[in-house]
Length: 172
Image (tube, rainbow, N blue to C red; front, side, top):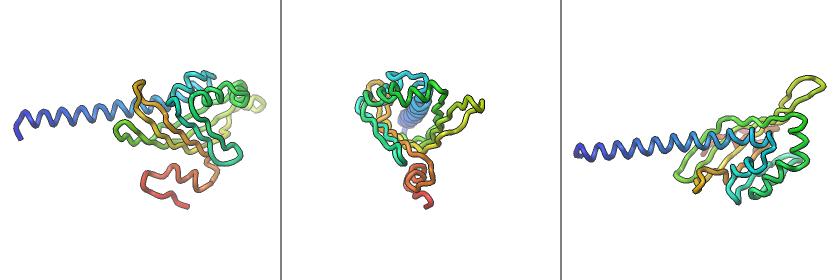
């Protein structure tokens, strides 16, 4: 291989590595925006993290529901249930996701904690810890959430399985 060909190959490899790093940073920032957006009651900012037809599913237990599209997601933020939570003191804290970027699509898994204020006890408490799986797509606006599935870590095998590395089965 000629010196010029080697330089071109090295440049192409570096460009690919930089793009992957940029994608990982953008995806991590996208996840990091969710908590502050939803806890401030910013419906449009929260919904804009998803694609127009994106899905946010909460599965398992008595609170199983799905929000389909930005309108449903924005509606959840301004809805009485969520507004009641944030007006009493609530924080949605998401961990840094493990990322698997595959071109213009990416997958991930992470934890989410729902922390609530107890004024009578003058303390915060963790109301919910959940497993999350993510699917993102690259759009003209940048990376967006195509699907987020959130499942309470209540001991159910299905919730634990969401956290297992790709291609590996969770312990039963």
